[in-house]
Image (tube, rainbow, N blue to C red):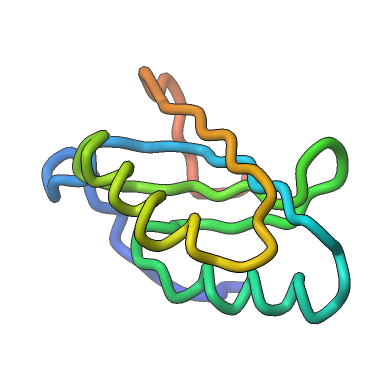
Length: 105
């Protein structure tokens, strides 16, 4: 059942204090387009998690950067350069009242 053992670092102490969730809308949904997006996004160190979603948008990304300037550079120079992205909507975390990594058993 255990997939991996990791240390959970305080992101503020390692200069990754900005946390964003970005909704990504793709132009089309062919298998090749989906695979290419997933493959390319997995290369970005700023992307902590990537989920394919049902509903209004195609993917949600959890992104961690040092600040808004770093996020802007990531968006402009990495994420927005990927082909077949229609729209990106980003939402920024103000506070984190609960953060768990363990599943209740």
